[in-house]
Image (cartoon, rainbow, N blue to C red; front, side):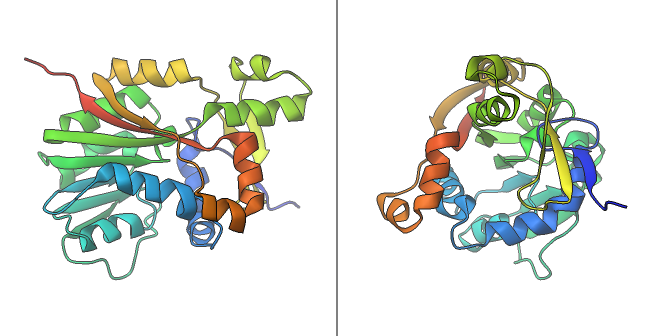
Length: 255
């Protein structure tokens, strides 16, 4: 009997939490590899957009094991909280960091967050797990301190369109605008099949708008020249699938 797991993955509702429970340890192992795109591209760009975090409180929604947030605390962030459904946390987090097992789709039900305000709120490749994306963003927006912002990372949607076009023998345009789910074997664990819910750029922008947020900055980070030379296989992947989008979001004024 196969021990494969089929679950709705990071861009779909339903069983997405189950998928992450299965994948969390594999993701953390993959992220620490020398040629990890998270290590080479994503985290450096995210870190740059966050700026100086000294004295800032940070809420990381979908924090994984909490290592990125721990790094921010070591660089001066304070009163910071990480939420992840896996509960697969660092064994010895630094002082000033609290790690809580919980679902980012149910933030209202976490008593530890009651009345809390944060200078920075992160959705680092975790936003696709939200069962109701607009609700999740509205809840996060309500927890922003004055002059705070949300940093949100999403996979470039064209990546999925390219993958589906290759798989189905169709065109890029057909697959970019399809609403049909897309299933594939996870690159982190080949015993788990993920089902992605497609989205377009307009879907993302409309979600931000519906949640009362505006985009201050958008980045599409790429490999450095040195990394391109050292890891040509990663550059080949980026040339084909484009990578990620990073949004710095602020709430619309209520005045």
